[in-house]
Structures are given as C-alpha cells and as structure tokens.
Length: 220
Image (cartoon, rainbow, N blue to C red; front, side, top):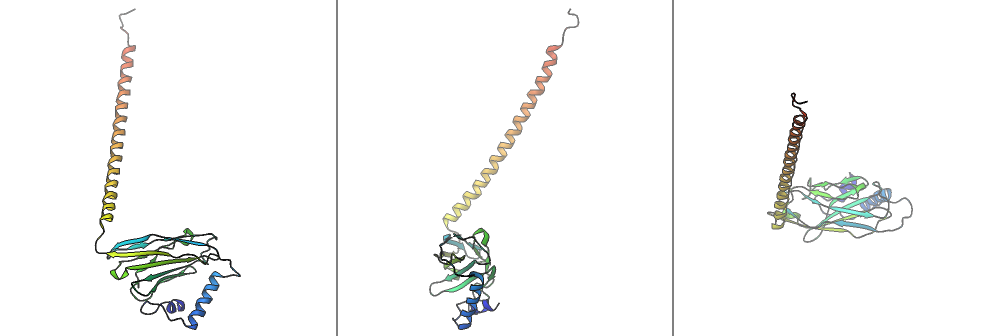
C-alpha cells in the first residue's frame, strides 16, 4: 500500500519525513484512533526481556499489553522497531487490523505476525534468524484513549549453538516427559493387576459358598 511504501525505504530504514508522509500518517492515525477529544491514560507493555536464539531457527518475540480502556481492534496500533549497534529501522507495523511488513531489507519475508489483539498479545515471530538480527527490539502499543506509556524492549542474541542452560532445560523437559509416561504406564499396569486379583478372589469366593451349603444325602 501507499502507506507501507512510504513507511519503509528499499534498504529497510526509515523514510524521510516528507509532508506527504506526515499527512498520510495523520489521516490513518486520526481515522483509526481519534473520534473526538481523547483523554490520555496508562498503557502497560510486557516483553520477555533477554532472548537467545540459535542461528537459523525461528524465535518468538513476545509482547503483551494491559490497557485500562476497552480493547478495540479497529483503534489499536502496534509498532515494532529494531535497533542494531547504531541507528534504527522499522521492523513491523500493525495499523488498524492490517499488518504492514518490511517489503525489503534484512527482514523481508522473515517477520510474521503472531499476536492476538483481543487477547492483549502483540507478539511477532522472526524466521530463520541471522547474526545481523542481534540488537534491541522495541514494542509499542496504543489503544485510545491509552496513547501514552512505556515501550517494551527485547534484547535478542543470536548464537551458533544453544547455551548450557537451554540444553539443560531441554534435557530436563525430555527426561520429565519420559518419567511421566513411565509413571503412567506403571500406574495402569498396577491397576490392571489389582483388578485381576480382585476378580480371581471373587470367583474363588463364589465357588466356595456352594460347597459349604451342600449336604450329605445320607444324613437326616
């Protein structure tokens, strides 16, 4: 769209602030967010902080928000910004229920919307991360009249292999899953054995009762 073309440059950086861009953004923002005079309220944004991802894998950048106003998906605006060692460039723009993805640059076809506005989720997924993705990602959400508030930051670190902590968590998770399955199998087998023994005792008891009740035919 015209807005997306003006928002992202071919290199993936910020566009120059021209009169047309300011006018177009103002029209979009006022159409989506303003319907009279709004009162500024608080918006809370929560992110996962430091995130580590292995080179070539997908990573979810989690961003949730808490608004004092009722969530209206037609008014909510979510913006993601990536800041490398120096400078900054827009990564993702979600405006009035329509996502605008970077058409060019290092994030082309690598950014995917993974949020749910009604669920207060503004997360995104980066596909097949590279080392050039190292940096700080900021998530900002506005839900009129909550148009002011702190932005959430995520510091992404792309590594060659998983760290010891991640490997430990993975081993514990796999080991815990196997242990849970084995425990369930033991419980099931034990229950079946108990049922079989109980049935055998009942059958043996049923056979003994008639024997006791039988009388000697020669007895008076």
